[in-house]
Amino acid sequence: MERTFQLSRRQLNVSGLSGFLLGSSARSWSEFATAAKQRSAAPWRPEEGLRLAGSTQPTISLDPALSRDLPTNFLLRQIFRGLLRFDERLAAIPELAETMAVSEDGLRYDFALRETITFHDGRPIDALDVLESLSRALRPDTAGGFADGLAGVTYLRDIVGASDVLAGASTMLSGVEVHDERHLTISLNQPSATFPMKLASVPSSVSTDFRSRPAQTGRSNPTGAAHFAAIASPPTRNFS
Image 1 (cartoon, one colour):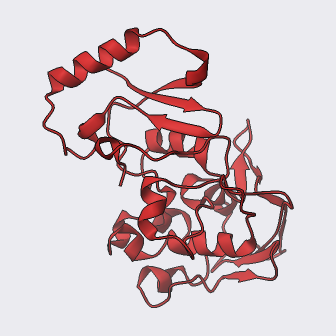
Image 2 (tube, one colour):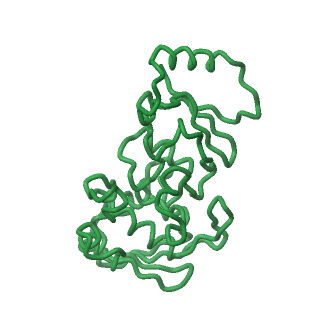
């Protein structure tokens, strides 16, 4: 049985799992199957937007820092953007960044952000948002105090200062230097040919301004910058 996601322009709704996401409901599997069958039989209406078939496995969080499976990554790519993205040939190219320049020794990546990029709520995205998002993706408290629950351990460990953030010795990456609102430099411990691909991956996404919002906000109703936005779900469909 497939799980159905309904996506409309600038909105993302999740349907079909009700309490099964967190096991918080007493509904039986047969009740769930009956409800899903009735929903799939209903005629599609244009106002429902795009309907996508997702995994039968629960999506517990829409936080890119916690995403470790392909079905969830597929959804998050509709909500979030990063400095880079993959093109049709799976090469890493600028997305939120307008330009990227790499030093001859491969240790410094200089980025200039696009001038008109904003989050779904309309707030402009700046270089501090990049620093905070990448740092947060490595902070153990993002995963309830357990660094092993962070996808950033795999994708962002090349950055100078990543080990300090993972160990709880620092809250911000020392290897991400913000020059002004649109310009920043990322420094690596050693050259890495795969680093651009890692920056184009979901855990490196730039997300909600966690400097001013509670951490839980980004987990249940995340704010990104891609084509679709997630909206708050009813309590029985909560992702947090």
